[in-house]
Structure formats: C-alpha cells, structure tokens
Length: 481
Image 1 (cartoon, one colour):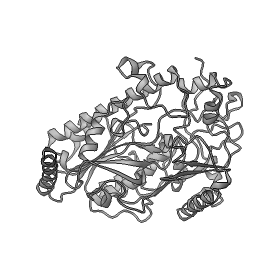
Image 2 (cartoon, one colour; image 1 turned 135 degrees about the vertical axis):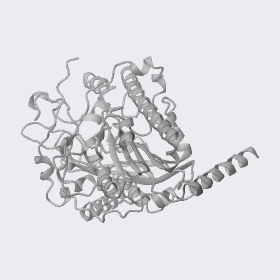
Image 3 (cartoon, one colour; image 1 turned 90 degrees about the vertical axis):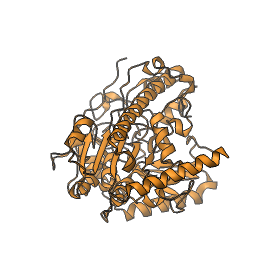
Image 4 (cartoon, rainbow, N blue to C red; image 1 turned 60 degrees about the horizontal axis):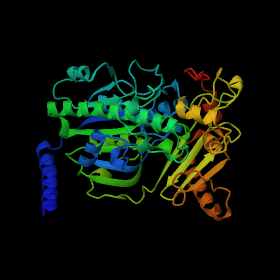
C-alpha cells in the first residue's frame, strides 16, 4: 500500500510541476567529466564508488544503460557533441589536439542566436585551437559558475557547459585509499590482472570521479536556490572511457561506453532506466528540439526527446538497437616517419561488437620502442601514463601478465568480433571462427553502409587526410619511475 502511495505522489508531483512551469524554454546544464567511463557509478551497481549526485539525477530522471560516444578521444568526442555529428565529418577536428573546423553548425551558437545566454566553465571543446572565433565552441568561458550567473541577463534562458578536468590523469598516488575507497571493491575489467597496484590506481581514478560528482551536486544546489532547477535540463555524462590501457582511445566498451543521466521534471517522467542505444551526438538535436528550434539537417545525431518524454523503461524505440563509433589519431604514436594514428570503426549491438582496424600493421597504443617514436621519446604514447600502464610494461614477459599486456599494447588483426553473450568482457576475438562468418559479414555491411552514407573519408579513399594533419600538443615521454 505504501509503495502505491509513493508512486502516486511521484506522478502527482511530476504533473503538478509540469503544469506550474508551463512550456517556457528550458535552461540547459551540460555537466561533462573528462575520462569517466561506464560502469563507474553506484547507480549502475558499482559498489566501490559513491556517486550521490549522479544517483539522485537517475532517480529523478532517466538513466541510460547503453550510451556511447562518437570517438574515445577528448577533442573529436567533444566536437561531435557540440555539432551533433559523427567525428569523422569534422575534418581536422577528427583528431586530438587539432584545429576547430569552420562552418559547421554548433548547438551553443544556435541557442545563443535564439535568445539563450550561453557560456562554459573550465574544459569545453579541446584540446586544440579555434582560430575562427574568440569564443570556445562550447561557449564563452567564465572563470566561475557565479561569474556566469551574474553575467546572465534577468529572466534569460541559459545554457551552461560545466566541464571538469576530473578524472583525467595524472592522479596523486594513494588518494583513493586515503579517502576511504576500498581497492578490493573497485570494478576491475577482465583485461587487467588482479593486482594491488592496479586496484589502487583505479581507486585514485574513483576519487576524482567522486570529486566531479560533488561539484555537480554543488551546482544543483545553486540552481535550487535560484528557483531554476525544475525547468532546467541537466545532463551528466563524460567524453569517453577511463584513461587506462585498452580503454581510452579504444573501441571496446571500456573506451566508448559512458555514464549518462538526464533530468528535466517539467517533461521527463522520473526513475526510468532505458536500454536504447544512444550516442552523445544525439544531445545537440535534443537540446535544440527542447528549445523548440530546428536542428540543422546535417546533424547525424537523433533527438532523444520522444524517448525521454515516454513513460516506459527498457527498450523504448526498437530502431535504437545498435550504435556506430570510431577512432582516428589520438597522438602520433607510430614509429617515424609515420605520423598516423590507429584508424578504427565499429558497430555495437546487444549481441556483438565488430571492429574494423584499417591499419593493422600499426601499433594500437603506439610503438613500445620509444627511441623510434614519431614524437621524440614517445612510449606507447596513445595510452596515458600511469601505474597500470607501467605495471603491464614491467611484467610484460611474465607468463601470468603477458596476455594482458598483449591485449592492451599488442598488434591486432584487421577485424575483431566479440560475442557479448559469451564474452561480455570483449577479450576473445572470434572474427576468424567459421561459425561467425555470416554474422561478421552482416555487421561489416551495416557498418560500411553507414560510414559511406555519412561521408566518412576513411572509407571513401581520403583517410590519409587524418594522418597528415598537424598535431598541436606535446607527446608523453618515456617515464623514469
């Protein structure tokens, strides 16, 4: 009986709020972490971490089980979010540390032209240069959230990009354990050996996720105090997976799958878990539709508004049963004079992950021979330095570790296929098995049809364009721990 009363009250509050707020243009707060991967939130069942703000938003909004990015690298992923387009359509913006491409519609700019007060805090689009405008594509940067709201014209709808540097490396070693995180409780992907050094490294990563979670909680309390919370769309998510081997800059779930929750009480029934496959490119058209604006026709993302405003959980739209993503150059990590990256494209369904590696002769994470690296002293340079990477390197010849080292840093075949029912960890490539031949062929056809339809230079004979673009950053150096 009590449960029925609680359910009635939840529905009553939802419709009462909706009636009170009417149909005014919503405010938009986009809170994006830097390198936070799925499933590292307590709302997803990870018992090693406490993400109270994320969990609250999940209870009061919609939690997405199958959210993915366009590319598991900061610059192209953030560019895809801002433009609502797959990263391979962003010309030089498809690489890390690149130049923002001119002439591509950006949702913050569209909102600004239609009366929104737009701004960003901390990390917006990047790293890279945007020479075509004095303003970051995510919006004019403000030094504090208070400064943003003080500059906002009275009664103006606002769009705030709330970016953070967490949980990007480097970490203060031991921060996680010192803060009370139990390393025995952290989520350990099966492509890592179960050792103290790696568990402690993950605990440090968790500590920074929890710090981001607290910062978003502070922002929510600010919105509550302003009386703006219930007519504000709040999105809390990340740009890609964790900065660990075989995660960031890879097309496995550890690199492409992200936490995502969306709250907007005036339109979204609360407390739902949705399993539809959604892309971060879907957010731009969603924001525009919520603001009653038309999305540019060249956006490849599809608005989530109909899905969000439904009353259902689980799979809402049957067509959202797959997702496409890819990768070009993270850093120039091959052996000189090769300035290319490790180009990949993939399709993920409920049952399978298929990956096409276009240059299988290259090193996925960069050459281990730092003396020959394109960037001087670059050592496995497409993978962030840290204790997990260092442990795998030091023990690469140990019989119990070699398999994990090879999974992270070894060369790969042109095709990878993972049967997710038998192998949810995505560590056993069955692309060469005869019994999967027809499945592999079907997935490859679907992938290439989509790439061709969306104008991917990599499948249209122009892939070298990505390899030859200038890299504006500095490469990681061989560690001297």
